[in-house]
Length: 225
Picture 1 (cartoon, rainbow, N blue to C red):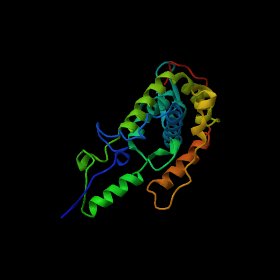
Picture 2: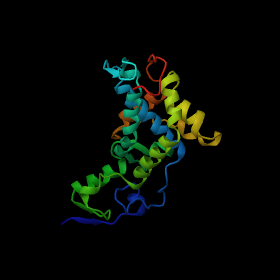
Picture 3: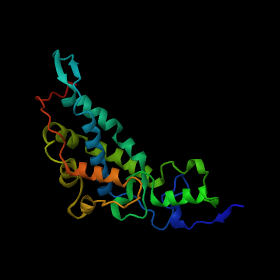
Picture 4: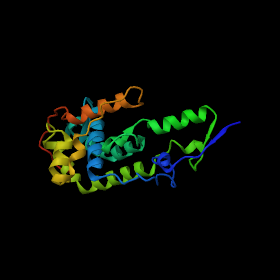
């Protein structure tokens, strides 16, 4: 017979569902954390299309514009960047901003292993909903969307004129955060053997430190693609 395993509030932290995430350590993402991962995800999204050879036709002056230097490329990246946060999990075993990362958290991995061994684990939600985004992750996405609206002009300025500077430095340090709010930007995950997603996160941290690949922008006309 399966054993019954009542879980403490700490294990509920980061679990998905509307009723989850009320553990003693549950908290809202900070502006530093939102900006840090927004910068990371936007640079990664742009990096994926940096080598595109697509050419766009501009109807205004019948000019042909390289996609990888176009406003269209930026607009498409901004449209989807906050959705990337729905692939994140809350890793309660990690400190500071490192609690947010892609991949399954160590806590959730442990709970699933218990279920596979026949232990009955009660999170207050059906098993099929365990992988749904947690309350904190949903807040991370919502705050990302708000930050995009507030700093869209800054992001456009970076894209067209300052890509030689890492986005986290330009956006977060230069425009979003007050002097005492920048601590999370220096937090780097060193990885843990056997920790799912650790290698991917190390690669993301390295991306965050690097400026975007240089692209040549012609004089930008806001009315063009």
